[in-house]
Amino acid sequence: MNPQRPLVVVGGGVAGMAVALAAAPMPVQWLCRSRHGDGTASILAQGGIAAALGAGDSAADHVADTLAAGADHNNAAMVRWLCTQAPAAIDWLVSLGVKFDRDARGHLQLGREGGHRASRIVHAGGDATGAEVTRAMYRKLGEDPRVHCREGVDVDALLLRGGRVCGVRVLGADGAEEIEASAVVLATGGIGAAFARTSTPCGADGSGLALGMRAGAAVRDLEFMQFHPTALDIRDRHTLPLITEALRGAGANLVDTSGSSLMRGVHAQGDLAPRDVVARRVWRALHEGRGAWLDARRVEGDWQLRFPTVLAACLAHGIDPRRERIPVTPAAHFHMGGLSTDLDGSTTVPGLYAVGETACNGVHGANRLASNSLLEGVLCGRRLGRLLSRLPQVQPRGAHAWRERGDALPEAMQRELRNLLWQAAGPVRDESGLRNAMLGCAAWQQHGWQARLAHALLAAARQRRESLGAHYRSDDVRSPAAATPLAGAS
Ligand code: SIN
Image (tube, rainbow, N blue to C red; front, side, top):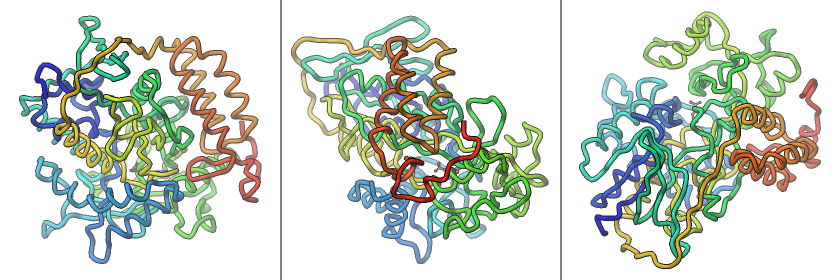
């Protein structure tokens, strides 16, 4: 590779870091809005990393659970690869210095989360897995002389030459700068922050997805947005602290205000049913005025060790989860859709790659299984980094053109748009809600890229008339339960 043209990796989460680390010996320009990984969804990840490591567990069972959660909409070959490679991903992270939680004999502790029929989730720092993985990977990158890290910058345009992406425009404190690249990887995370209630950071706004779309990259499965059932229900807040599913794995239960179980009789796996099932149940309970609470008072052990992040978030809002129930709400959590890629991360535009939540390689299907996201970020990031390090340098020729993301909507419009998406394209959707939201969005499209992105998502949701995975249409006539109206839905 020509050292004059580095690989440009955009995004500060684990997927981007894994690409940068694995791309050796290529020089890398690593560009992120965040600093030290702060402000990424990765660093917030509480659930851990799924890997079939326990006695009696197997990659085949991990595959089966991933396909079941994904409603068999997954790319099965990719799922098999992911689940088979998962133990090696844990080994790699250990080699980077990640300190996973272990028992007294030094064996990895394996927890359980929704949709998994076995205990196969490794954690670090209790519910601080993402923070620990980010810390170790970030430190490793800082030691790597190949990697030039630029933090606090935004990439707002892609340079194409002869139809091939070969550079970026970077906006930083010193103004705009153009960087020529051998290839560009978008690893900018998901779009949770496009919704009024989200467990993701506000930077998960779909900026990379919007940029890729402007460059002409195909998208896929945009309608599949996962809603986490249990974010801390703080009134009038956009980004909400997550209340990890691992608490339900440790015995916590969802109840209504009167204390009746929300999940009894709903699904064979009860409180640990797949995430979309639980999220809809919580959504429904809230719309019916029953209230939704997580009762974690029976959870055993030291909360400071097991769930320090949840404990701190609850205490900061005047709730002691060891003694009282936690008010919960669904929240936009993970986008299964994104820039359409092949299994290696190539988009449909030469020179442009995508990985992690920005990409859709089909591995998560219609609904991601818990704790498969850090896993995907690490494994697919490594796979892509290695691939790029082996590719011969292509000298782009032909006319050059900049593809810009464009202006952002004014903040007040963004707020309105987030509410619109939450109501129309939240955990429960129907034709009239989607149609009206699209009309509202269409008028805003000229004002900012967020409206164009929302319009594309609404169009995809409208096109898929039948419920599948996290995409739930209450007007899908195939399911009698789906037709039950939500009392007081607004
Ligand atoms: C959680 O901790 O509940 C979320 C884990 C995940 O998104 O996989």
